[in-house]
Length: 411
Image 1 (cartoon, rainbow, N blue to C red):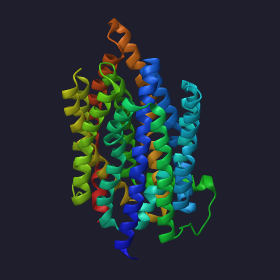
Image 2 (tube, rainbow, N blue to C red):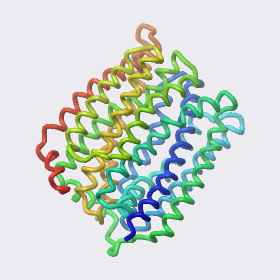
Image 3 (cartoon, rainbow, N blue to C red):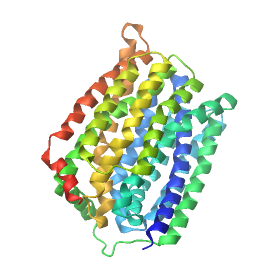
Image 4 (cartoon, helix red, strand yellow):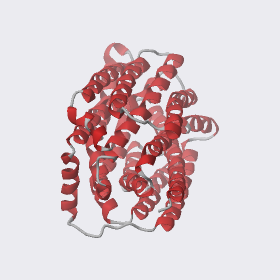
């Protein structure tokens, strides 16, 4: 195996996902502004996010099984390519006079169904391509690509919305799907398909994915804690935009989101170059604790400068947490079970998002209506509380011995 060439293939695959992330961020930003301007409700924004996220969550486990049974690169191509159908549907509705909230929900839901094929196959492909020594560096780059939707997309979208409307953002997003499919096809041709030698029953494969994960007690506890963390992060994700839009405009929102996410860029670049050499458990706990503190600071002010400062620090801490969690899980799971395991990990760890998306918008609207504070201040109150609880939850990572032992097992 030529590791140097394989890392180049990873970079090609990563570049495709970077482009796709930017395109998806344009759509997410544009639809968020569009819905808030039409409804003035955080709950409506949360509903769209929930319907876009739910299929990915529910299908993550079977998608992980598929990633172990079929050609992972082909699944990535199908997932990326067909997910454009939902965005095309929304665009057509808007070109006919404006998309309603139900139409947007349908389009986002359809796109998410196909996107569910992507994540387990993408993560398992990284394992196919790279050595253990390259995992940490690759994880930093993957985090960087994921942050692109927060770093580049908002400022681009905010500027484009001053020139045109949300339809232009949707068109650009649709074009990015084709580029990512081409990148996956090139990588697939270079390394060929990788199929499981033994075809087991589908439900049995899912059960085995759970057994593999539960056999590693430390990994399972980490994943459960991550689910609680995603509950609080989901609240922040939903409410940051209505919080800022309540006293500002779309262009300022785009600039603020980009400034905040640049913290993730700085950390992602550092991790991509140097990686983390050790003390993964301690770094994970500290990074999540600091993220919670910075999240609370974000909601304390109705001024763009302190919001940007605390937002920058929040995003700067996240890549360290993602890198450590990714490394601890990846190095404690057998290579041949990576797809099933990551599907199960994704399902459990992201259950918190479902709760967050279901309740945070309604909570912000309800708190904002008390005393006539408005949805922005209601959102701020929820964000502050979520940050405090997140910091307290992070302390639980230091307690179980089984989590600390994960670093010994990877050596």
